[in-house]
Length: 158
Image (tube, rainbow, N blue to C red; front, side, top):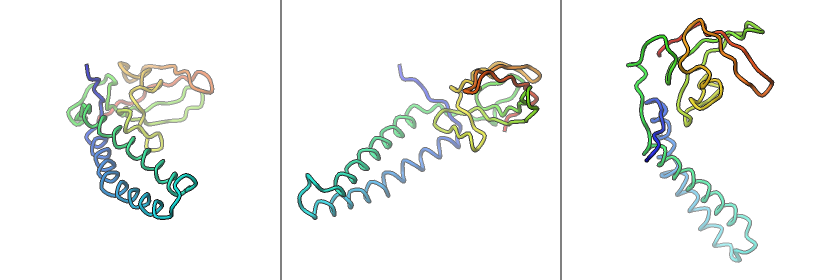
């Protein structure tokens, strides 16, 4: 059975953009680098050639990974979601019970998780602790620096 990869429409679009960029811009540029390096003669000691081949291998690997994720994408329309129970797509406001610091996280698919943009993967320990909970609940998460306790102060769909 093919395991679906949940993601938002925005996450899907971002993967498509990266795939097109890697196929139509990066791939031809690397092929050009390889051809140029080849023209310099002896390939066994040609650092430019080996570097370009390594870059090609990395790019092709990423293209395959993107194609796979897009093929298995289960696009979830967050605008159609609602309710008080936290699930995929929810934007959750938490207050650290020790420091009273507020944090806002949206639970998204792994390919689109980006902590700097406030998006955490559904597979992360924090998201797993939040799933199924409601506003007002407390959750404890084992963080790298030890256990952290949070109170859920808001659940939104945006």
